[in-house]
Length: 571
Image (cartoon, rainbow, N blue to C red):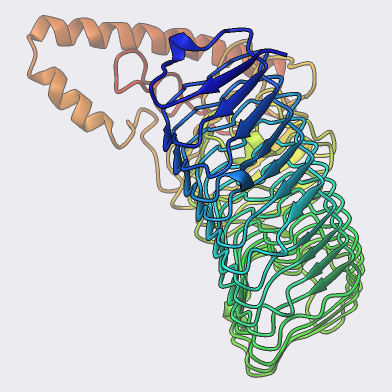
């Protein structure tokens, strides 16, 4: 073993690179930044009696792969560990004892020490900062028994400590920051202390072996934050703080094992997705203080049979209990304003008697449509179905959709709105008379029958179809892209009536040279005659289905990026 005595007069260059033991002189007060960084053969650090060491600077021992243990108790005056002091001391470092006067454990102090199994915290420790023990995957024991002054555990402080089994936090802890114990997959039992005020987002998310959660002593805990216990897939028992008033978005989502839920007595708000996909949950009894149940709060709780609502309930969000297909009892308070029940709140609850069954999924133009929905109705406020993400083209990818009921206020269905909708049962659609623009929305679908409703207000209604499309036999088929414009023959005699925006196009052309306008007109007329000849061929080929085709208008080329042809009316 090579031992090196380190004093205040020395520098990094004085340290042998194959040193295995560092003896810190008693007179040394500060270990500089990166002083022993990446000494690959270093196995041991020792301190002389009467050590005056007060500060170890950033990354002082970072990357010492063979360092086996760190015992700082021999430095009674040591107050500060810099950032990343022992980061990446892996795989050898297994045990750590902190000095008695350390109050703040700096960021990444022992981060990525993959072999660390045991940590003994000191009595005066007040805060554990960001990522202090992140990725210490073998850490099994964190001794909090002496840390009665610990108030804060920082961001990702114990992130992915996969071997940690039991965690009993001291009563003094008031704040646990975001993802502090996320992915602690070995954690089975969790007890929170009396002074806890704040649980931040995803603090214990994806602790997949967590079995028992006890927050009953944390009487000051008012809010359980977003996705706090998300995907705790083994959680069977939850004991809430009696003071909790709000359960935030996704707090217990995808926890499929707990069957009983005793909500806190002062609970006011259950936020969106709070208990989504808790598939073993059987019954929910809301306390009298509950006012709001958010969107999808209990969505897909497929074992849920009974829900008891309080008299003071004010609102139920969209899809709050959707697809709770065993739900039998959900008696709404008589005083509740039914307009405060969101779209599809109880969709797919066929056995429920106390709430009317909602057999149609109401699409509001924004929220995704679940892939297993069979019947869809558009909300009254939907005026456009576009081809952007989160519209029907991105959602109808499964084989369950069988019917779509369009609303009377719908005005436009864009190209590709239903493209690649792999729903073989969806073969017929009926387009309402309010639609004024329609551009090949059913490309690459099984739709074979398109009914266009007529009315006095109909204008420029268009659809693109393909001749002999292999998956369909549409009412009108052509060997090119076609726009089909409906019209009212009673109120319209002009077969060449132009669309609404044609007048502005014509005005712009009039301002050009006369020759340019004439040439443009000549091209349009030539195209018109070609389309009319094609129209005659269609009339001969499909006399049984197309007997009243009327040329309505033609517009092509540079005209505001609007293409093609008005061919007529299909009955």
